[in-house]
Image (cartoon, rainbow, N blue to C red):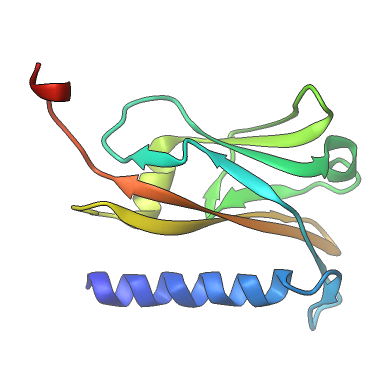
Length: 143
């Protein structure tokens, strides 16, 4: 089951990489996919963490994102907040439990690619970043 899920995820990521590798690629329905640079924080995500969020920083100006009503998602998990940072670039926040649900049960450290997608009427923005996922429970450092 893990292998099947991993293959599906790898296929999705590969497909998105192909779509975002060429700027301004038009899909069959005339939707234009424009690549953006993203950075996901934290760079190591503990799925057992009960904290509030995963944050994605982009190089897309927030005003560009407002031109159309975009739906922002990270590997299919919807954002709960989108706002500009101090430089005016778009930042999106996601609940940790929504990201954890995407990956299911991970027992050991796993490197994954997270892809932020902003889909609008005729334009889609997409960008990817690699992070490490762990699933550590219990007291920290034996305390």
